[in-house]
Length: 120
Image (cartoon, rainbow, N blue to C red; front, side, top):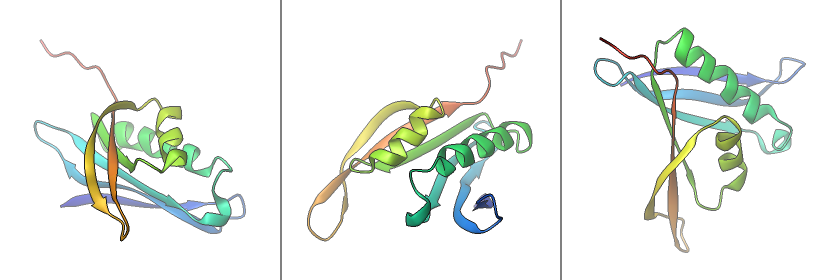
């Protein structure tokens, strides 16, 4: 499947993470799944929120996408905060989605609509 892959750089142009638009579908959907990871030493410094904001802008204005979907594990509060700061809406959860070796974890689902084009 199609995807767009980016690196997250700090102010000194060191690679500190990645951010991707995966499973891109055009046609009737014009959507992608957002996936990102910021290195541990660089978390909680705003890099994730800024990277998501920049990629959302590219998703709309360069890649011509309409909808971005994202998910986080229930315990991953920092990632949920990044999505909420970027105006994603919570749309539901998958219960007991992933076995982490000790217990089953829920996965939370989010979406963001990038435009409100009305045809006709």
